[in-house]
Structures are given as C-alpha cells and as structure tokens.
Image 1 (tube, rainbow, N blue to C red):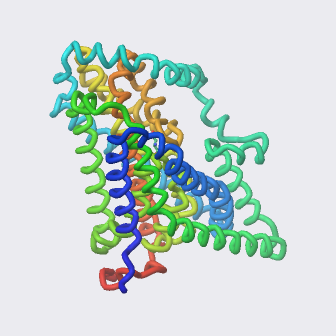
Image 2: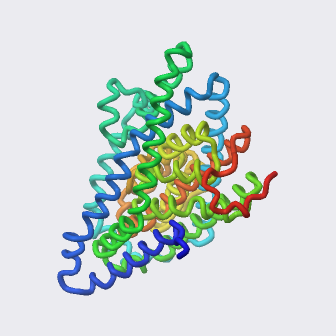
Length: 434
Ligand code: ASP
C-alpha cells in the first residue's frame, strides 16, 4: 500500500480533530470528556516539541557556526539573513495596511457591538496591558542587554530565553573556530552526533504529529468562545486571513523563482511544519519541525539553516507584524479615529519592532501590539475588541511566521551557493536543476 504523505496525515488529524470537537461540544459533558481524555495528548505533543527546541538550538548552532571556519562567512550569512528578515517584515506590514485600508473592517462595527465587546473582554486584557507596560518602561538598549545571559543553565531552563541560548551557542561556536584543530575535533564530532540524534527525535515525533494535532484542535474547538462574536468580527478576521494568504502566496512564488524549482517543492516541503505551527500557535515549538523540513526536504545546507531558523523563529515574525498593522488600524476605525498617513507610516516602524520583540509563543503578538497602539495614540481598551478571535488568527499568523523563516533560509542559502538537492527527495522529478 502506498504510504500517505506526512502532510496529508497531519491534515487528516486536524480535520478529524475539528469534527470531533464540534460533535462533542454539542453533547452534554463532551467538553469535560475532551479535557480529561484528549487534551493531555495535545499537551504531551507540544511539550515534546518544546523539549527538543533548546537542545536543537545548542547542537545545530554550535555545529553550524564552528563549520563556518572563518568569520567572514558568519557575517555574510548574518547580514543577509537580517536584511531579508527586515525586508519581508516591512512588506508584510505594508500588505496588512493596504488590505485594512481597502476593507475598512472597523467601520462595520456598530457602537453597541463595540461596547459589548469592550465590556466582555476588558478584564482579559488587563494582564496583557500589565505585561506590556513593563516592556514599555525599558530603556532603548534593554533588548541587547537581555540577549546576554548571566547563567547559561538558567537561560536554557526557560524556552522564552531562546535568544540567550542562541547567543551562547554562537559564542561557543566562535570559540571552537579559534582553538586548535586537535582540540576542536572531538567537540565538533560530539555536536555532530548530538545533532543527528535530535533530528532523529524530530522524525519520531512526526509520527505522532497527526494524533497530537487531532488532540490540540479538538480541545481548541470545545474551549473556544461563542461564535456570535466571530461574526461581528468577520471583516477584521477576513482582512488578516487575506493578508496572510497573500503573504504565503508570495513566499511560494519567490521561493520557486529564486531556487528554480516547482512551487510544489516549497509547498510540500513546508506543509507539515505549517500544520504543526497552525495547531500549536508557537514558532518556538515548531522550530524542530521547521529545521528538519528546511534542511532535509528543501535542501538548505545546515550551515545556513542552523543559523537562520532559530534566530528567525524569535525575531522574524511576518505574520505577527501583518496582524499588528491590521489590528491597530481596525481598532482605530472602530473607535472612530482617523489615522493619517504619517501615523500609518509610524505603524510600519513600531509593528516591525513589536514583532521582533514578540516571543515565539501563543498570544505573544497581542502583548506587543500594545506598543503599536500606544505609539499611534489608539486606545488600549481596543484590545478587548479583538480578544475573542485572537486564537484562530494567532494560529494563522504563526504559519506565516514559520514559512517566512523558511523562505529567508532558502533565499540566503541560494545566495551563497548552499542550496542543494534535498536529502529526502520525495519529489525528485520536480527538481529543475539550474
Ligand atoms: N504565536 C506567534 C508565534 O509563535 C506569535 C504571535 O503571537 O504572533 O509565532
């Protein structure tokens, strides 16, 4: 029997999970049953992914950097990666602003709906404002200060400190380049093997992905808030959905033009990672899968992917930045405010910074959205307007975030001659050599 490809299996898990969730939410006691018997499997799946994220960064970055042999290569990859991160983020925000200004979703919200939403969700947004306030009070260099940990074990004990772990790993890799070959050899060999083991773990975990995704989606459906609010926020949600799909389309088109391959290579290569991103709403949790897909299925050399992907997962969030631009303008419109061109240009800058500052975990984009709102003089209470539909939109923006990282990895790899034939050539006949 022909084996069903992984992305189809995960998609099936997702659809069955949604179906099962809908059915059980209609049955009395169904929600509790899912929470008792299905939800734990979803939690186990996410935890296992998170479990290997930090070891993966350690292993792959140390190996990746030490393989570079000299610093000029490191800075070449670094400069290109950061330029692409920035470029794609600004493009994403511009797409968001364009769409929100065409659809004008905030204008379709009546005053009574607005008041109802604010009343219902204002308490939920208070803790978000608190967290954001703390961030807003930081000095301008706080971001850099935070990257350097004082204790690597403490840093590695919290997945939110990914940038600190990245920093240490790069430093360690640089140290490895500088010591003598005799001393470096066994250390490199260790991390080489370590990497292989972690990648194997990702393969094993992927076997469980359809079941994990089933459990996550079924739980999400039974725990989601009432559907009426979705309808009130239809145009807002649609603006973001359109923007994200446009962005995803652009990635596919440009990835295939730049790599001279059929679009299906990028689509099939990334589909499992996208589905995991959709189900977990976390770029950090998806990182092991993204890494495996990009290196083994898209043919990006580890030298590039080990550097571009972990950093991209934490700082390059195109979906989040697009969402923040749309959300800010939507809230302003709903409150009857007019945003001048100047303010909207300011949003490009603040949404870029806010998306860089957002952690790669569920709901993080909504916290740093406050920075965008504050800069543009939009009422913070507006967060209550979008709270009800944030989770599904978070799922989508995480897909764009992860795909954007993979896209940057492909482009950077191609630009330095490090995009080869995928190790796993499940679409051999699709490859058009340049
Ligand atoms: N959940 C997103 C991510 O992990 C961040 C966000 O909330 O926008 O990429």
